[in-house]
Amino acid sequence: MILVIDFGSQYNQLIARRVRELHVFCRIEPPDISMDAVQKLHPRGIILSGGPSSIYEKKSPKTDPALFSLGIPVLGICYGMQFMVHALGGSVTRSEKREYGYATLKVKKRTGLFSGIPGKTQCWMSHGDSIQSLPPGFEVTASTENTPVAATAQAERKLFGLQFHPEVHHTPQGKKILKNFLFKICGCKPTWTMTSFAREMTQEIRKTVGDAKILLGLSGGVDSSVTAVLVHRAVGENLTCIFVDNGLLRKDEAKNLKKAFSEHMHIRIRFVRAGRKFLSALKGVSDPEKKRKIIGRLFMEVFEAEARKIQNVKFLAQGTLYPDVIESLSAFGGPSSVIKSHHNVGGLPRKMKLKLVEPLRYLFKDEVRVLGKKLGLADEWIWRHPFPGPGLAIRIIGTVTRNRLSILRRVDAILDEEIRAAGLYKKLWQSFPVLLPLKSVGIMGDQRTYENIAAIRAVTSKDAMTADWARLPHVLLGRISNRIINEVRGVNRVVYDISSKPPSTIEWE
Ligand code: XMP
Image (cartoon, rainbow, N blue to C red; front, side):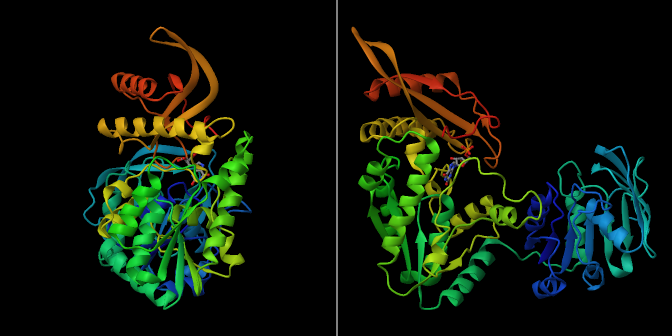
């Protein structure tokens, strides 16, 4: 296992990714982690990430310098290196000018970290401060034109520093350098795979849960689906999933879920049909935040009432992923300001005295997909587009009625079918229709119509933080529009949303 200390770099998740791609498990922890905690984790090596601060800033993140005396190899990257040099008696100069971009690295010592690396290679720089003098015992192992100390090593104590970023693709030898650190210096073995993760996690869940009962809110999304299958493998019948049909779901959602999870995988699911309750609470409400609040609160209520019917429940499983964990742990930035309120069952564990089980909390999304596949989950569930908790209610602008839900559901089914048929489903982050609170005039046959407008939204994205509107082929857009207007009574106009995030959001509400 490798421990990454997070000094706030935008690249810290990339470091973890690179390490895991080399089949070594890796965890990211904040700088204030205690040395006791570090030792308990038994890391084979420690990587200090980069960060936006200068070590001379009062509030710059610091970790206990005792870290360098634990006998564990350390690799400092950018700020991580400057922190190490400063902590061990070297000095760092503040520079006015940032060095940002490609540089040619001249490697002086082609051993250790640089074993097998060409004497001259490209690297990616992104720093303000630079090393001025090194602590005793350290030597310069590489430099660039602007940065005399681009890399340093104290080979005896296995302490290494890089001013450039080996974790980004712009440093072509970066992976090899990390490989040298993991395997040559730390003595790691490339044994971490999804199969080993599934095996170990199953045992851990079994040990934690024992004979007690564990609950899971199954939504049919990738994360809760994979969690359900994993926990079910560990504890079988002791897992009960609760699926709340809030009446705001897509066509055939409950039916498909029942087939896949109850009938094929024999997972115990309690289906709660609460559509009427949600619709009556939403009656006359058009404010987006109010809709979200009502749906969130009702969901909690319905979920809790159902949960209380089950005896001997001690645990609640949740499909929390690593990026959420890191975000909430990070000493920097913290949780970003609430732009839209998201609902989940976050309050339930305390209220019902349940312990949380989060088996995916160290995985990234694509790793969760690999895990799902290994656990036998069909592609249909693994590659699903995200669907918001408040469901179709936030895709119906204005008030939500049974009739408008039915119109949107039919439009949604056509869009989904066409996007899949065009082979674009996996390439898009999301595609969905939005029903507008506007009517427009049209002509059908010889009749004048005055009907609804449906907007189509399709975006590409890596993580939903930013998104670009998808350049769908015009022929496909034409077919989608044609089918919707012909097949869905109540819609006579289709428009395409060409806004990106930011400044727009993916959902309309
Ligand atoms: P926005 O609209 O904020 O959406 O750009 C970013 C991503 O989050 C999804 N989303 C939600 N997911 N509960 C969820 O589980 C919610 O309340 C919610 N609101 C937005 C959205 O579909 C997109 O993928």
